[in-house]
Length: 140
Image (tube, rainbow, N blue to C red):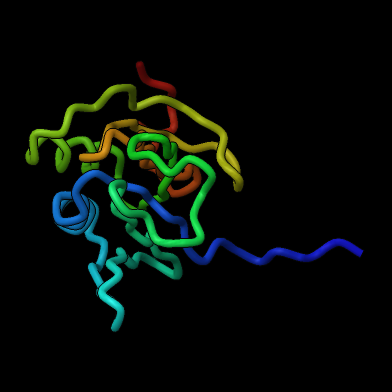
């Protein structure tokens, strides 16, 4: 019998600068910063969180080669993609790709891609069934 996985609880991001990462994700993407009793920092959103590990001294246990800039993550939003693009522009964050159509775990979506302070690739997507008619058509 295989183990049945329900959902992702947390993901560890190895970062160069924890304060810059917290500021980026909390200010631009609305995540809630938290600190554990042991001083470990994390970012909560929905029913998940990102645990933040410093690249110079990652907590054990850790990935085989924990390095900043090696994550490629997709986050789902209820905001329109136009609102996401506007928020990124307001904070001086360059969109690398998008808006573009993609296929996620639950179906069609529209995505934009950009980098966080550790150079991780961040994709923010909105599912097509939640999108406005303009967002349902593929764009550049």
